[in-house]
Amino acid sequence: MKSIKSSCKLDNELKSYIIKKENEGKLKKVAKIAGLNKFLRMYYGIVKKKYKELEIW
Image 1 (cartoon, rainbow, N blue to C red):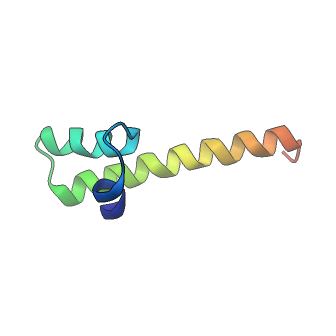
Image 2: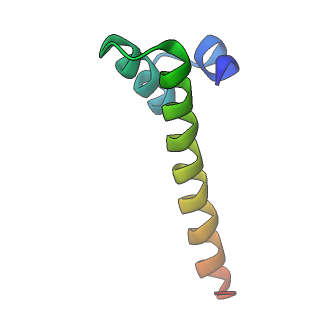
């Protein structure tokens, strides 16, 4: 999460989500964990969509 926050462009959805959580008053560590959870949900959705296209599931 540290590398996403430091190296991504400003228009990145995940980076803006982490910054939004920090601005809400969350601790930086808590905001990064929230960003990690969001990343995992996004990644799972992409993988699930790919498998449905391949008709494996």
